[in-house]
Length: 226
Image 1 (tube, one colour):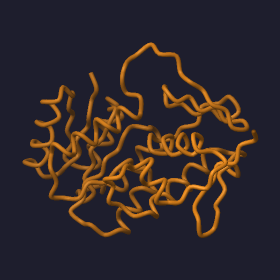
Image 2: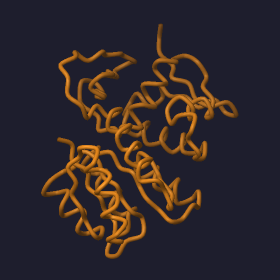
Image 3: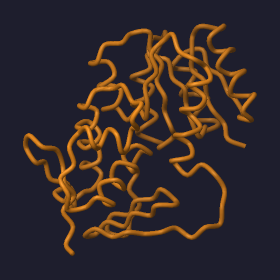
């Protein structure tokens, strides 16, 4: 079964989220603060983490940074603040999605399920489809990226963005097109989240980062030889 770690310092909120997750068949672990979250994750890694931003000892940003250094687990951040700078910072640290309080627990659980599905956190014996771009090997069904034959630790959102760029290779894609294609039409975030994710993705492509080119004033293009 898939485990979700709920990190929230408000007991009632933490219990509410946990109850909804359990109803959907998830195993749930809980942490009351950032320090406890890192300790629990180190002992029992979870496939997804629901992470509050404002917490004692270590805030959600610090926890997100630590988790991303060791894992590509799905991370959904919760915040009572709606400032774009906070959200952009979370995305730059590697968060997969952001939910602003107050929120619907059903919507939150649906987001977690969708992200896990995209991350390949489901069984199956289907052989992975692989695409090549330079020294990159993009394995669609297993959500794996190889750089010169070596695994690259990308987050689900980074992988999904790269895959979308590949399927539309050699075409200029605007930020709005990328938002619609990767984040979905219902996404309410800022287009600059695309820039933040592209920046992180390039860092993980090594010598092949130049394959993703910025077309000033228009968007991005993945240049792949025919």
